[in-house]
Length: 586
Image (cartoon, rainbow, N blue to C red; front, top):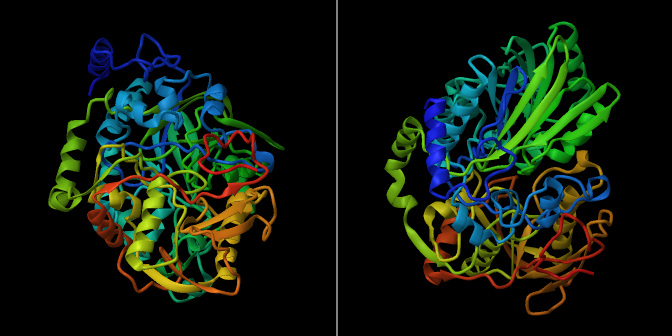
């Protein structure tokens, strides 16, 4: 689509009243247009989790920051975040970046994302920058998160990204397919897959397992250099460092991961000195708190374009280090945002920058016809299954936040009831779309919450002491004061169980006051029947969780969540990452 046609359509949308609340410091009423700046434009999206169509996605009301992370992005929610970005309640920004009045705002502003709409926005931003002056970067978590991605083993997303024009990507949930499937998808991908921190094990190299570089052991190309806007720009890949811990190692037994700061510093120094680049960008899937620490330790990086934690952060953080300063950003999730980083790059240095995080409002952006045709073709064989109605939501169903969301609670309740358990456990995944009150919960919406390669359920006898240990371990991953010892994800979701949590305490002292829903105290020495899913070790014997959830929904017919098994929180009252909490505060 030509830029003039795009602007004409937006003007029509404005005259129809669709641009209400969308005037965020833009020119001539166009929320996606800005005056020219610099000579290089980097476009960045991340964590789309295979959502090809526009969706609803509620931002968290609980994203607690501890120690040095307290009171700064991404640990600002609700009105704290609005104050930080200078946005008004009731505006499109309030809807895009916060949970506030979500259901009503979703009805007003419509769905977000969708690759056909994202394609239109990307093309307009690239046209605006001029030919040869932009790169499109994908931060990963792209091939997983939907039914069609699971059923095609990620291929639907590879071809969609080819149509989108992705130049460079890194990964995380991509590695939850088998290693041979990962390599096949990389072959299908028209861009470059980069990851400096993924190595082939020594034993695997000895056995002849392929590597990008057998001398260094790199499993994939660690970086690439592109001529953009007349300048040499290095892009270094940083895949999720804890993949074999957070996800099953059995799928990728020959690859090791890690943060590898020393290797990153050596690589940055080398590309600057030997390759004579003008700018160094890290395309990261570390999570924002980890990126902030990396930026403080590794010199010579101009910007880290980050993902993993799904944080829509409108303004980059400027992190000082011994070599100068590094921009750190995070571009949200689910195709909901497109980050635009405009750089004024001189010889060997970045002189200045401008950053915008653009919400992808499907009502404002016409669907690209070629992308929409592709999406329709991909979905056509599966439509009957995807569109099966299971139940009607009587309350807002969402996942995203440090503790149980309402959709998480439905999953936990389903596991307990269908599997006949006292307690249920569900992983603290951050992916999963939202369902508005009154909308039908289809099989597609169920798969948005559960579509993964290790969905098998289990029922096990666990002692009260074992259950507490699980909660303590996950809480330490979430609230450890050192970001490098946080391994991703939110708190494990629970059903039938209540407890208190002190995020400011240390390991083994955060979790207390464990009781069952009927008020009985959890006995450390007693065994309880526990149902769950998504074990990262050996495959569990039970049916996939989506079958358990679908059975539960069909039987219930209507779903209303009035109580969440969220903990009593201690010593975090007043934390800027906590608002409208459903539990008690002490």
